[in-house]
Each structure stands twice: as structure tokens, then as C-alpha cells.
Length: 94
Length: 232
Image (cartoon, rainbow over the protein chains, first blue to last red):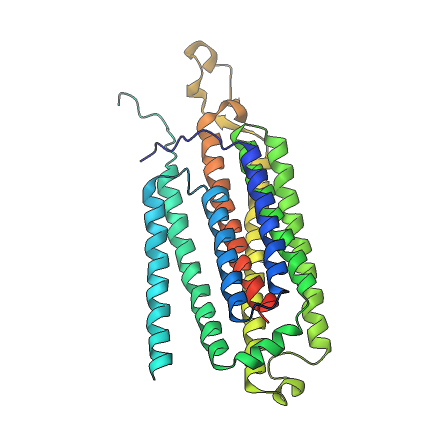
């Protein structure tokens, strides 16, 4: 297993991703200052998830990597989701 | 295989899998803490709301921008090494470490400001307040503290990378690598590192893995920032 060889990602792509990340940070601060109540929590988490995904796909090269890497990550996130879900079921129904 | 020559077989996929497996354990470590935060927030919504008002959004936002930019310089460093611009790669790496220092200085100022006002786990000031506020600040110090330790660890790793990429770029080959008629006169052979594609490849793999760690620390902060500084 030694056939990685994707061509180098263009530096312009990195710059665009960085600008998008900064813009999303500004957006999440703006949304938080508007006081949407419970919705602002959801908005903050959604925006953070988009930012994290951008970093994972472009900066951490997951987009250009073998599909196996994405499957492995999803498996880890799924595990975390199950742990969280079961904990919340316990906390809420206790 | 006729002669037992010394060959490098850099296995980039293999070492990346190893790095990702390690990153998953980090994900679960912080994931457990995010879970703790979520449950306690659910139980003490008003206290969490009130306590998070006292965190300075501006400091948090600046630190977010610093870490995001450090991630950019990190990938630029990798991109430069891929394109064999060793010097540029080194400089971007050093700038990345510089951003790490800046982040930690801000964190230090923020923490000392809080501690100065008597807000730290187990302080007299906090024991007089609600359980929810105590939970919020305990989680704040625990999670940003553990994240800070990760930033320090990342800087150490990047420092090792600076040393690795910056050290004299040649290696010594045995005399037997020379043509037979030249062997009698030589003690050893020095090969320019830039001509040694396999060694280059090995350094690139290590730098990429170091970058993965640095970006993960960034991803964790991306979630810490809104949860502590914004949701109020």
C-alpha cells in the first residue's frame, strides 16, 4: 500500500478554505449576538461542524485520500455518537 | 533481489493510518468531555448561560483566527516541501509555531485574568456561587487546559520537524556505492539530500503526520470556541 500520489493540492485552494473558515467564524459570532434562543445553540454547532469538515477535507487531505480513511473517521464518529446517544437516553429517561 | 542493497520503502498509507488511529483516540478523549459539557448544560441551562457571559468573546475570536491561520501556514509548509522548496517550508513551519506561541500567550492572559478575579476550581469566590457555574468553570479550565497542553505538544512536534527538515541535507553512503575504480581513494561518499528522493519522501510523510495532529488541535478548538464563548 504505497500508491498515494495525488498531485499536490493547489495553494489557492488552501487560501480559499482559510478565507471560508474566517468568514464562518465571523458568521457564528454574528448569529450568537442575535439571540435566537435555543436556535442559536443549533446554529453554533452546525457552523462549527461545517468548519471542522472543511479542515478535515482540505487541510487534513481527507478529500484526496483513499476512501478507507473517510470510512474509518465515520466509524470513529459513529462510535462517539452512540456513546453520546446512550448517555442522553440515560440522563433524560432516568 | 540479486544484491542486498539498503533500500527505503516509505509506506505513506501505512503511517497515515497509524496517525489517524491515534487521532481517533484523541477524538474520543475530547468527545467524552464534550458529552460531560452537554449533559451538565442540559441540567443547568441558566447557570451556564450566565457564566458564559463572563468569558471574553473577543479573546476567544482572536484565538480562533490565530489557530485557523496557523493551520493555513501548516498546509503551506507541507505544500512547499512537496514542491521541494525546503527553505519556504521551514519558514512556514516556524511561523506556525509562532502562532502557537501567540495562542498560548492569549490563553495565559485570559486565565490569569480569571484567576485574578478569584475564579478557578475550588476558589472561595466560586464556592459561594451556584453548582452550575462551578461546573461551567471547571469544564472551562479542564477543556481549554487540556487543549492548551495539546497545543504545546503540537509545537514540540513541529519543533522536531524544523530540526528534521533543517539539518544538513546530505547523507553518507558506504564506499561500496562508488564505482570500483574510485573506491580505493575514498573514505565515504556524501550525497546531496535533495537528490535523494526516498529520504525526501520520508520527511514529507512525517511532516504530513505532524500536520494532521496540528489540524486536529485546531478542529477541537473550532468546537470549544462556540460552546464556551458564544452560546449564552
